[in-house]
Length: 120
Image 1 (spheres, rainbow, N blue to C red):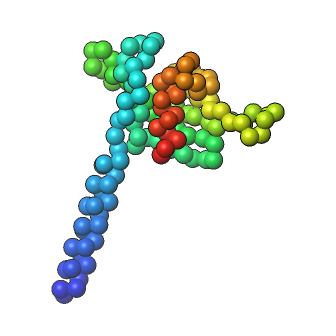
Image 2: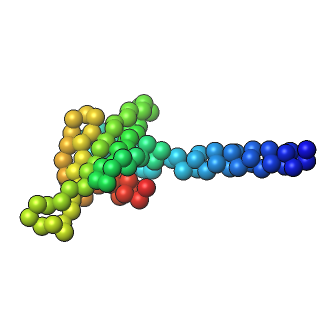
Image 3: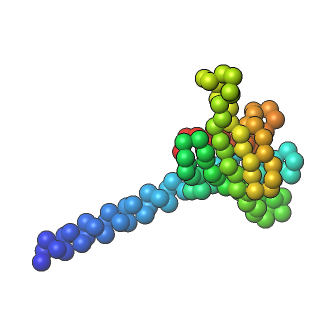
């Protein structure tokens, strides 16, 4: 009887600990303010998915100046240049219809997003 009670307590502790670990990992990471809208942008780490070897999915959370929240879903792919097998670059598209190549100067928010996504 005591063994069963001890095992139940240990199992309960493990379940609680696993639940707390997931809560700690889920957070919003600031990636900049959009030049187009002036809204603050955050990567929602709990939405990062890596379904295949070259693709990633993530949701961007945008806070408007009035405090409203907007969400944009993104897809990122690692591409290889056909003429240079060892060179790679990253492209994206989002649920608003924008797409392009991830670039520090031209697509700064997406570049910052990619820096976070590739770590997860």
